[in-house]
Image (cartoon, rainbow, N blue to C red; front, side, top):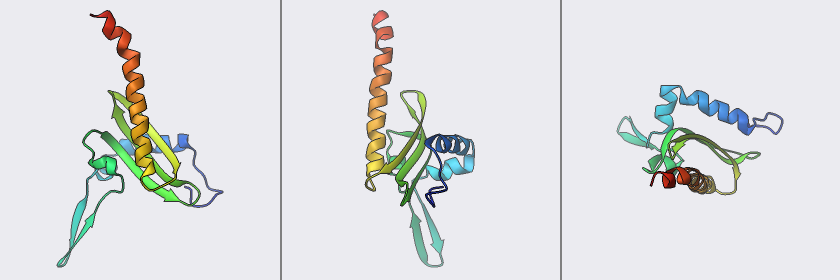
Length: 127
């Protein structure tokens, strides 16, 4: 859980957790919601996700969760589609609040380039 240095999860454990959460429609819906406003009497309380990728229309995110602990740092786990491939990302110990988002964008760019190169010979052969 990351709540103590003796109670740990591996990136593999977190990937399994994300896959399980992706099969739960309620978790999926709330994890990628752009936000909600709740009325409390005459007050309105807005709730927004801390992951700005949820609001980015260039991402197809199935499920995501951000987090922070002293031992694990800033973290992000997500199930997303990149170039028609299902990808699980587990980003741990990012330095700053927005570093995990920037890291995810860099991983996405790298994967898109890899997927495009892998398919290039097949495209060239059809010409």
